[in-house]
Length: 467
Ligand code: BGP
Image (spheres, rainbow, N blue to C red):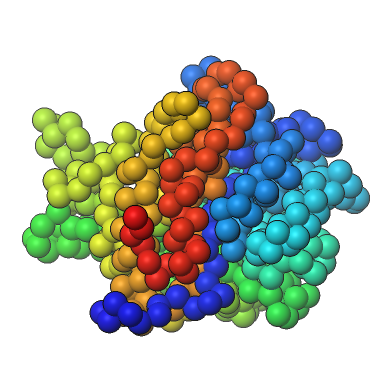
């Protein structure tokens, strides 16, 4: 690669991301209704922090946006909490205070010249819809989600041009509580989850169509979790296990979003489990008509897959049924939570998605978690700096390889509640001074990675190493 070549366009969206239940707090304030994230957090609150205060962003919006401005962010990805707008998911009237909260945030961002990137659903489905009609197991949720999405497009669309429909539908399918599912019989559970999955695809499609109708100049797409999967060896059995895992967990989702139909291998997989979803005439037109404008990718790491069950003495491996299991990659470093550090894997992933879909891509999440330590007002998070450096460098290579990228949002802007593992698993550029069970005042401190990313943004990614 020619070192002097300019790689990033001048309007490249250098951003950082959060989600409502992980950052906001204020979980019962100003009319907010309960959602599935509240329920999940409440289930674990004896062993880890919950979302009642989180990073207290609900009360610190102006301070947080001022720090984003100082950081030089060009974009900020956040999610709107559906049950702040409609506490029961489908109320006749919007909750004015909830609407005003996001108005205030968006206005502050626009004033600071930071582009808002808004996710409509990030793991928080209004609980009332579950009691009323079974949530996304019912088709009614598709229309209620569309109504909520249309409100957001109409109300915030004068200031928001980038939208994301559903965050990590593929992850929601592996954690049933995220969709409020309580079925315990494994056979019935698979069937119900696949019906929910189908309705989420429909909800994604309808929201895209509504966005295109109401905001013809805006861009909208899904945010997919995409851990790249390597085979443990060149044994065809391992190769096939890795391919199958990758297809079922990530590419089938992307295919359905982009092409509007279930790939045959996915339908076969559902048939075997007697879990083909019920569909209606006319659905196909909606699914095929709703082409995303871009693909949001949450990419953190790679995994290694081996065919068959693990040998019993293999303590490091995680089994996924009889078909395959995940093992550690001896070539890579891992976080304390077992997520690998693999920048080259990132380049591979970007090339793969570009070749498959030829859609512009936005990295909607990418980051490194650690237990950070605050000492004399400073946090020396060198590993996070290395992670940013190495992944942005590989993204540059991917762009040079021909991949079209429109933005990069590191996860996360600020320390926040992990989606499953409490508060001490930190990802932020900004440190939040709180403990797992003592939220203290949630005072903000800029980590070393804050200053590093500030320089990268200032150099528009053309320079990644600084004195
Ligand atoms: C993604 C989610 C985020 C975020 C991130 C890190 O799956 O979209 O909400 O939490 O992963 O995961 P975790 O918080 O479990 O470390």
